[in-house]
Length: 198
Image (cartoon, rainbow, N blue to C red; front, side, top):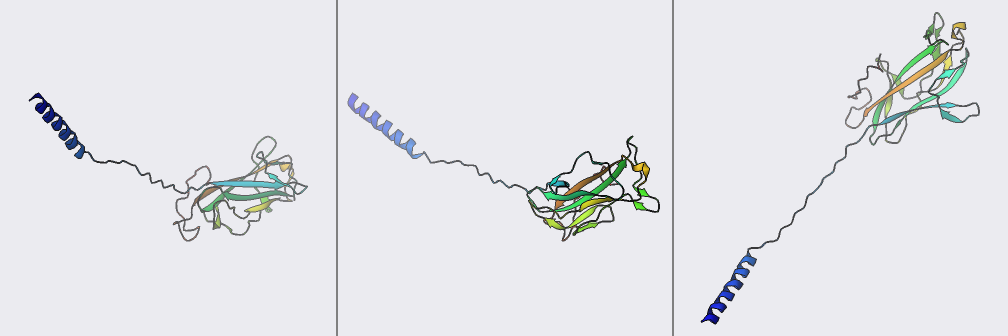
């Protein structure tokens, strides 16, 4: 009788194990990461000067000293698109001349015109807001044509300009060109920069 009970108990355990096995199911878990990276708009103003030996070097940050009346100074200005996306580009040019004491000197001579002049290159147009707009979109890794390559100083500069320091500061802005107008004049989203504009 004990053997029969033990056998029935063993059979019951086997059935219980089998029943619990039939209730098991396979599971799997995974997480999908869909990464979408937006484009970027980054630019760098490139300012070079050509030395007397013809070699191009970075333009000095301190500006130019010892300018003589009627001379031209080599200053090559362009903008490189260092971002991942094509961009529209515009530039603001701020000029100043200071005497040996640091006081501002006039940028124009009465009846003679501007002290400093430069010839604007192809595909650059000055807008009504004073910015110079590059009329072609600039691809990633590419550069604009030169805004100018030299600054001419008036032969009418008088003695008050002796020992002066001339500075031309270039500030650049860019916005994406993709889905942002058919041309630079229709582009939206230009940065607001009170220190640059007027």
